Image (cartoon, rainbow, N blue to C red; front, side, top):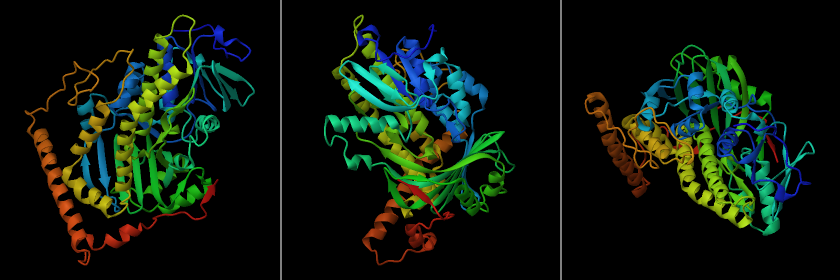
Length: 525
């Protein structure tokens, strides 16, 4: 599909003279998926990116089955698979760098959902998605949104360079510090005082900061694998490919920060943060300082968490980190952004199909579509958010409960129950309803929106696989009984001292000392 030129629709043009038009702010995973799908649907639109597509920022993007299925629908998955091989093993390590659990977790996910689990540099991922667009002229760079004016017959998006775009709806895929969200809040409170409360604005919390970066791969970490290295108040998440390694070093902050406080750290503070953990082992033979020495780039950032109550107002809707933000520990952020974009895409496609020639949707029709979007997405986002928040705190031994789950339950159960949980979450993901899906590999978990999908059965001829599955189920139940006995037993008689393996960690875990806390942190309001 191609068009002769990508032109702005100006406010001087009569609204009746243009077709239904969608404006998307942000050319990340969600915004580019929008353009792929809307081009295939023949719906006029424009994607406005404030900078360049695929900037040198962030570390990696990891794909699970929910996102991989969407990317296969828009014709990108083959190119992504050609770029990098899938990861295979997950190694879980303690503060000494020694493994206490390791299994082929990514093979487990392939078995459950039937799609390869890829990890690559965020920049490379976005480049591929952009290059695979049927017509790249729908994406405009260096177009920063500064204002939006809503009317009964449409809206006008004002840009920093003095130009403007006319359309019927605006989708904010512009990230955690979303300008579109701020403008939506303003418009909502002008139209309906106290619609967006201070409590809602402050519901996004920053409890962790992270040293996020890309490095050349160093010896001792292997290849095509992930490492979780767990400490009290600190964790390392390291993903290794043959030529590049992606790292997230997460510290628990001494106190929570809430919107509009936005933590900012300088390059010098990032250096000090790295130096404070340089001597810590991240494998049997490697310390973090070796990885840092070979870094390509790195940033010290805050990790916001939260789900806002209002996902839309008037002709504006939000998707991705602008409305639901989670930590990177379960690699669900980009996948959830794709899912939310797809649900909106389906609503917009249906809305467009219901229009008569020359007609455009009313504000009431748009509002109803946006409300269905939010109602469909909220339960899945809450489930993904809770899973990620739990894992983040398990990695950092954030309290006795999370230490127990990570060091006592996890090694006994193995990774199969976690793969089952993530696989089941992925199987309920949305797809683009008007594009076909090609399933090339079997899956043991049924895709919930595919009535004719017959899941593959566990191979009973493979005794080792069947035994691992049986042991995991048994161990999960046994660990739950042990934990209930421990937790409630201590609650019955709090005068009893904690003994055994818990004696040395019970009190100081609750204090959560901040390992490697850099000095002179700057907070910007």
